[in-house]
Length: 384
Image (tube, rainbow, N blue to C red; front, side, top):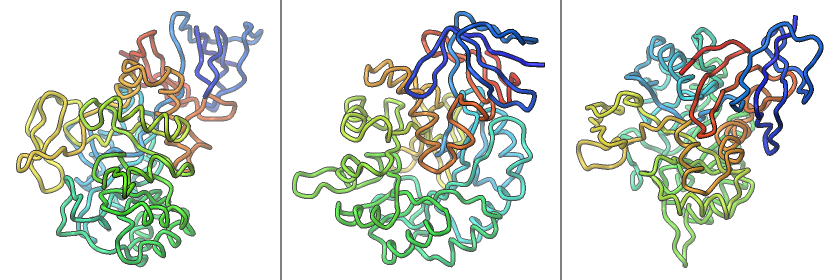
């Protein structure tokens, strides 16, 4: 028995094919693509007026629908996994905040023990955003828990997580950063640079040691100056690294986002949400970590001080925005929200593609890139 998807177009990375047929095996994986109707069709998912794209991959997301990773509750992860397909997301990295070593121990253990239990979007690892940051660019992170990176602490988190820690963000100017990065890389943990006042040279040294991601480029980092390129200058010019962007129209001006894409390249630029617990709830009072947050008109800001406190962006909206702003084609935008983030943390062997043998996690889109349906392992999970 062979199931096929028929659609007007299919987004295979840089190439758009269609109309055509894409097989789904009994194991819930993608089979072969054909432009001609196959002879062994037993079930047809027919989308003659729509496009098929890989499920989106959010490698930086704190919460959604009223829950947060830092709740340290399996039920919160269950809610996130269940709700994220409504945003087109089929794989994600639950993202922590700067907190005490003990709380992060507990959160890592909770995720590690329950990561494979929930239906919906698939947990692909843990992103530890902090706590080894600079107080000067703390953003919505709590400075009282910040300090220099310690390999033994990272090892403890990874042990508690049963190996699920995939990515950690640090400020590269902190003492011991280079040795920490080398240790993390040797243990298959990707290192990102964030909440930092580092110089260009400090960022370059960190990338030479193995760091490969700039977190929410422009936000929470030393800016570009003609005599000191800073973190932004490093993000624009260190071609081996990946650059995150929050394209909600509030964190980064469309022109600034285009500068990153044009200068750094769309194959190394990835769309993320940095979404906090109020995502999907509209205007409300909320919280991030130990801080109160006001969510209004599409932004989340600290009640005290007014700093941006993550976002309430849904990843499919980020895709739509960069196309609407005229700074990316639909194929580029979808790739920046699927394959590129997957590549940045080495999970592109299990998500981000429609290719043969990959899990059949995909989304159905109309001509405006509005989400119509999300499938996981070849089965419909969300329908508009």
